[in-house]
Amino acid sequence: MPDTPAYRAHVAIVGGATAGAEAAEKLAAEGALCVVFEQNDRPYGKVEDGLPAWHVALRKKEYKTIDAKLQARGVHYVPCTGIGRDLSFDELLKEWGFDLIVLANGAWRDRPLPVAGADAYINRGLIYQNPFIYWFNHHRDPGYRGPSYELHGGAIVVGGGLASLDVVKVIQLEMTCRALAERGIEQDFVAMEVEGIPATLAKHGLSWDDLGIEPCALYYRRRIEDMPLSEARAGADAEQMQKTGAIRRRILEKAQGKFVFRVEPQWTPIGLLTNGDQLEGLRFAKTRVNESGRAVVAHPGEIREVRSRLVISSIGSIPEPIEGLPMDGELLRIDDVEHGKVTSFDNVFGCGNVVTGKGNLVASRRHSSKVAKFLVGRLESEATQRARRSASQLDELITRIRERQSEVGYGGDYRRWITRFLPEK
Ligand SMILES: Cc1cc2nc3c(=O)[nH]c(=O)nc-3n(C[C@H](O)[C@H](O)[C@H](O)COP(=O)(O)OP(=O)(O)OC[C@H]3O[C@@H](n4cnc5c(N)ncnc54)[C@H](O)[C@@H]3O)c2cc1C
Image (tube, rainbow, N blue to C red):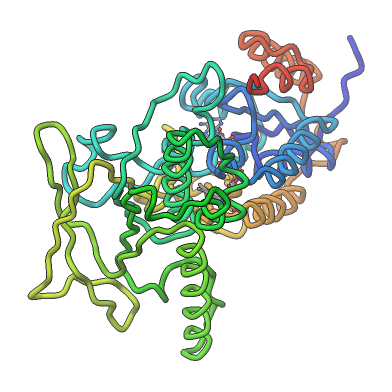
């Protein structure tokens, strides 16, 4: 029998992106065997499919970081394996015999637009942020087979956070590129994102008005100063909040200057405008912001009907539920956010976006690193492991890993696999 090492723990990690790769490397460095289950062929998560494609340098850097961590000693990559889709959480817990399970599966479900019946109009006038950004990032890839979205002037974006600004930018950049292409001008959206739309148009002797496009409008339920575009310090007093409000306003105005979109604060969607099976706009109610900072619909209120062939909802992403895992409404039920311990399990922890809900790479990695450091304390000593486990248990696990890898066509060479799945250029 081969002399197999005694790992200090066998750890399953669900999701191979920023948070998953971080946890895998940290735990493997401390003697754990880490098996990273990733639902997609490539492990880059939101970095590839959420972050708009103009973040070229950031994506490249993140890809490199994730690649290095997933190739660390003791880390086994299992692509094309969604937990809850190809393998149940229960199987992972009971049959594979893992000591610890780390959930690093991010937040991929769009929070539903809070208007009754809205989801019946998905892809019939209503699009959610996650598939929309996926489309933007991939629709130029040769062989792209995902949904195809038609953009229109005067689109409505419901949102207010940083991701919704990206949605607005995508619409404005795509519409401008299209208008320029109609004039025989090929314009790269990455360069236009840096320079801004007016400066780019000026280079071609054009202005926004020359394009004849109605800009899209961002509808936000609170005031501009409340937009979560810059984080307020915990426990900030009134003066600090005022400063944060001014920073938020400046961020927004700068973005408006570069991307020529409108903003409509203090409106919340309350109804659908439909025509047959098509959504043709939204009914909004004016809000006021109360003492605790919440948007409340004013009574008697002002109502506005806004017609548009395109409504994009960008009001946040929440974790996709996995059968067998406890949820608290739309979030994973966690006992302790700092260490990500999932309620009712001793050995299941969450890290990164799935717990923090923060759309931020650094926050995801930091949280994951913290959770991993905490879990290092849970790894057993090698001697205890040797006494507790027979070598055959490890062999069994390795056999399962190899079987699943070969089922999905992964031969164990990470670098070769990743190169195979680079988008064709
Ligand atoms: C529009 C937009 C713009 C952004 N801009 C910025 C920015 O400018 N700067 C910044 O720092 N951050 C930005 N972010 C946020 C950042 O991309 C995320 O916070 C971060 O990438 C989350 O990392 P994560 O590893 O926690 O989750 P993810 O990247 O979501 O990784 C989760 C992984 O788990 C996999 N997975 C999911 N479910 C399963 C399952 N059941 N089984 C197996 N695998 C599964 C997924 O495929 C994915 O690979 C932006 C996000 C969006 C949406």
